[in-house]
Image (cartoon, rainbow, N blue to C red):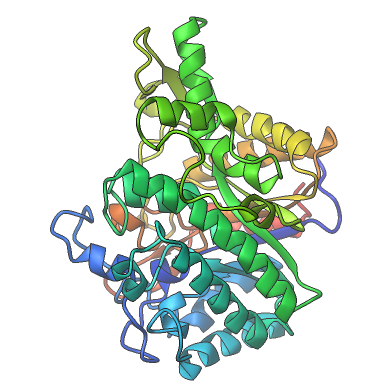
Amino acid sequence: MHQRFPRDFTWGVATSAFQIEGAADLHGRGESIWDVFCRRPGAVKDGSDGRVATDSLRRRREDLALMRELGVGAYRLSVAWPRVLPHGTGRVSEPGLDAYDRLVDELLAAGVDPWVTLYHWDLPQVLEARGGWPVRATAEAFADYAEVVARRLGDRVRHWITINEPWCAAMLGYQAGVHAPGRMSWPDALAASHHLLLAHGLGVQAVRSAAPDAQVGITLNFTPAWPASASAADAEAARWFDAWFNRWYLEPVCGRGYPADQLAAYQALGLTAPGQPAWLRPGDLATIAVPTDFLGVNFYTRAICRGDEEGNLPRVLQEPGPEARTDIGWEVHPASLGRLLRRLGRTYAGPLVVTECGAAWHDGPGADGRIHDARRTAYLAAHLDEAAAAVADGVPLRGWFTWSLIDNFEWAEGTTQRFGLAWVDPVTLRRTLKESGRWYGTRVRAGGR
């Protein structure tokens, strides 16, 4: 089923700075929280780190050649905060900014529109040492950083994303401890979630001040919640998960404030103090709800939720069998993307852009030297069909970025998971387009049909 997308639909690929750039020794780059986290024994599955990654800052022309081969018109990249401001605030690294200047110019010369994400998790370590995202000063520092970058690049970059996946940065980094900086505190995580959203609002204002004609949005990651059964306990578990994972971030951005039911649940569990949280100040919600030009949507899978009569936190089940899962363990469920897009079409008053969607499988080169990753092709085809059907139903979806352009450093999974449309040899770092990439390029050149 190949349905139509609008003629002006944006087709792209996505990456992030820490996952691909490497070049940790260039430009006086400061340390990020991920540099420090990677040195923690056992933090990263295979002990790898981002010092070299895929060496993309030095090999940017190879990556650009892949984009030309794919025929995409847009590239979602991120700027490394510590490469631009090695100390988090204050002195700007001009060589660091120059590196992004050159990259933007080369993309535009190749007919590829840069979509710049300002924060994709690489907080300068010096700011974490001062409290990190649980403290308000980090959001204020982000606004200053956003203005620095937008003033340099805003004459050419038309599309900006302030924060990528605040749920991951807050909950995986400050509550579960499985991402940098590796803390395990519910109060810290909730404060971090607020300051990440506050940074978004301040960042929108900073970008627009520096580049008045820019289009600015935020990228949220969504995992639709499905109850495991028709029981009241499972229905409540799905509601709790949806509020914790999805609504806590979506509703403030849409001007509705934090979900009252979830705030009450946090207070009942003793995860935040009764009454108005100390981190929420007058005017914050208005700042977070500053109008945006689009909403970035990251989607990979759904959650099947089971509760109990005791009111404990919901459990997410691992169902169904492994044949319907990617190598990272996520269920393949395209229908959840269609349901999500229709929901967001009703909730967010503006255009939507899928800023990440993709799948991890470790298919490597065959005897013929080609990478026959049919499962990734099937995954993308099914999810694009769901997106097209949502467009046909009137959902204002305006773009699609496949995650990711190339295999890269996959956070706590290290190099054990491969999401790329192009294979990266672990020794030589040579790029080879996979069959899924060839398929995606064909569909892109056909306008999505």
